[in-house]
Image (cartoon, rainbow, N blue to C red):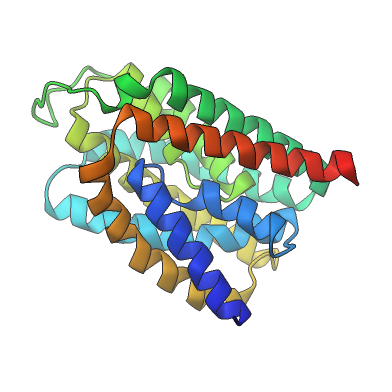
Length: 257
């Protein structure tokens, strides 16, 4: 199998798996790029953001047409996310591979812990109120969360869904059908900034762009459809356990060697 086909398969798998739990594929693709393709931290993050940006753009456009996006809240996230994205991309260039893997592994374990502990809450029924009839989130809180989203997105190349989704779930009354939509909208406003900074830093492997985008665009819709049939607390627990295994793999490679 050629490298292009392997990258296509990796992006396809990451997009399907990530879309099934509503968090995108970046948090799966980056470990694959680190463990199996040998990319450095900056290259893995920058290259992964290509997939993240493509997926979030296609998803956000669809959600906007369906009027499922809380545009005001998404813009508030973006206000903090733009400077965060720039800082995160610059940080990635200066972090040692060992430190990157340990930091990313710890982050994955935190995400996994949230998935496992709050699995039922994540997939439980919520009152489907109108998008505009939500519990207000202050501008300061939204901008602060947005900054963290941008920072993490560019630093690890994973997009901000892993932060935006639980933030909306726990700190707003936004209806369930609008949480993923608003998350995609916020990410599509912030991730291109990190992508551009990574591009100026020459972190993106241009030859990898086409197979990653193709795999992401093919896998994303499939994962979204599967989520309607398979999404359950048990699925999130399985994904959480898988993330813990990935985190341990990233860490152990440095312990063993």
